[in-house]
Image (cartoon, rainbow, N blue to C red):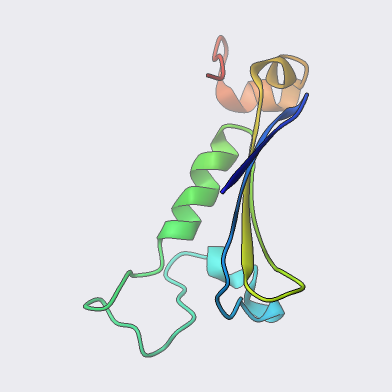
Length: 104
C-alpha cells in the first residue's frame, strides 16, 4: 500500500498481482450486487456490496474510488480523499457535506 499526500488531499493506492478485471467490467463492479465470478456464492465470499458501499462512503466525503488494470498485470485500487482546505474552497463539495462540516 502506498499513501501519496498532495496539496488537494491524499491518495491511497493498493496494487495486487492477480488477474485484474476485464476493462468492460471496471465500472460494473461498483454497482450493488455485482460479482465477477459466477462460481462464488455467499458461502465463499460476498454479495457484491463492498465496492458500492466504499465508493458511496468516499464520495460522500468529496473523494473518489477508482480501479484500473496495471500494465504488468494485476489491479490497482486508488482512494482519493480531499483535505479540509480543498473542501473549504469547493462550494459544491461543502454543500454536499452540510453546513459547518469539517473534514478530518
